[in-house]
Image 1: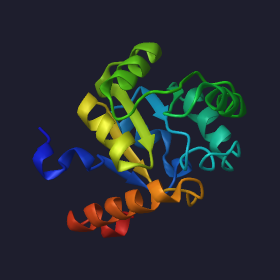
Image 2: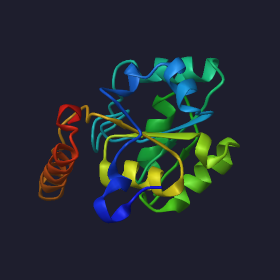
Image 3: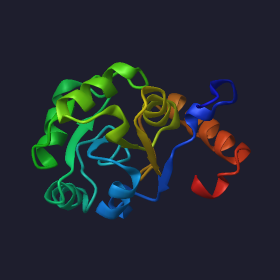
Length: 175
């Protein structure tokens, strides 16, 4: 059981450099049957519509291996729809209110998997990882692929808090 008083709900079960570094064998070893993907800095440039190289192919490979894949994002509907289309038309849930458990429940239900079989892949500890851990999903952190340029007043302190936390827990090499 996670000890939330010490921030253990912020510790990912798995760390990877980027989404495309995760193999289907990694997903199987995690016990995943479904994969929920964050958008910003995981599949696409923060606040833009530019999808990172190799992500669409990664999704196709995961789907061909039998994994159900969708987008689970806090972004607005129109942007989620556009990114989803660029990712090959995968289903999506926008305005998921991560870290709230609700979005993770909806994703697992939509994909037809148990929460414990849902791998949430994202870059943010306070939304993607905390939400996945508290929902009972598999938390997978990837390094942010791009620096956030919009809303620096929000993201600079947030990233600093993540770095301080990860270092304090001995994960400085995972930043």
